[in-house]
Length: 638
Image (cartoon, rainbow, N blue to C red):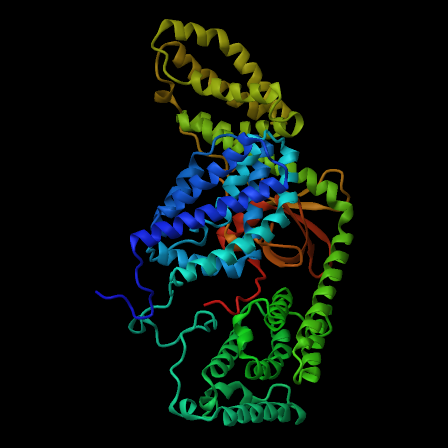
């Protein structure tokens, strides 16, 4: 079966090898330059760093589809061993760096991703599957930190110091690779379906990805001077609509569908069509409150005028007009659903649109000026928001350390329970001993004797419940039981388990140990034990911080939360909607995020009171479908 006409032809194996070799070399040369900038000249460090990048490049270049990539990534995640708390924070920060690199090089990476799909003959590939992408760079940085023997703080500082240099060098690298692959004739793979596969009604498409519309007979034959005059008359007509007192002339909504539009050059007609589709998407977006949709509709006339004068702007993500449209959509999406006229953000949106409609005639510089005012006002608003919650910084930092400890302790318990202990023991470890481990981590740290001892107690409890057919094993068990029981009691007392509950647990273990001492399998007499009821999410006081509470679900984490990409990108200023204890809906604005992104501080609506929320609780509510968060519409995406 032949390929769709809009797909690039397959490339030869020799050209593929040449292109991959050149891309790999360019990536390694770029990383080598970064290492020289930071004086990592030790040959062992350089070799380990570049070797990790080369290995990751080759691995990704060998994966043909998204399914294989996702399965291998999942398998890798399942093999992660217990790591030190610093390594856990470093991994989180490294993931954030990859996301920042992706956002800063979004345009170049998008083009490279499509070219590599052609190069590797891929039908479907994840963005993270790109061999020269941020994930490969992250592998190199991890190897650098390990080979250089950097401490936890030094690793975090390394990421901070390298960020701007990596963004600058990678943006240049990706631009050069796009140009080189273009020279080699490696085109971007089209993600559009064949015409017969496309649904009758489609969402708005971006101009970068939209196929060129077939020119009409009129536009083919129309004299360029006449076409220019027609464009000028359309612009004058739009100005007349505004002068007539209508900020949103109804006819302008269908400008691209009129017969006159068919006389425009293809590029102008497509730009008009793109803007109309983008604004229609904005008007229908569920995260934009009704109070913001009317002023945003006022963008239609100035943007249509710009599309007629400079149609190329719709293909330029860095153009001030596109950036302004995106910024206004973000501002609108962060408003509460019931936003009323008079709020600061809504006033800012209205003022921005009003200035455009008044001042834009022929000089597009006004778009950059309005964007600068909008971004400066946003910066000042977020700075003021941050200042209001500065007094809570230390409290939420302590809570972040507790959350990291909980994740680490839960991971240790999951690893221990891989030995499949009796259910009685597993439930005990999950619901009681995981709390002991978390407390030990926060009090003494992972490199302490107390942490090692707490792990040994859990491992010893599991071993004690296994059948002991050999007399020597039973003798060893008999000698260790008094110490084991004492350690268990001390741990339960440390986390303030009620004496009645503690004694009942220890008595149950004693009866099972009696079976082991007789050489029998204790699981054969194990009573039917139900798991304790899941602790509901609750509000706890943040220690040492007056007036601040934290929303979380305490206890053991049966699995590491799966974090959607949209949640990983949450930032200060965005709105969150969640469910509070008792089923009470709540919403607030993100005012602060702890360094490892384990605790988010919200300014709740409408009373502006602060509320800390654990990251695991945010992820849990997202999985349960009870979390809502503002997202700026992806206006120019397919």
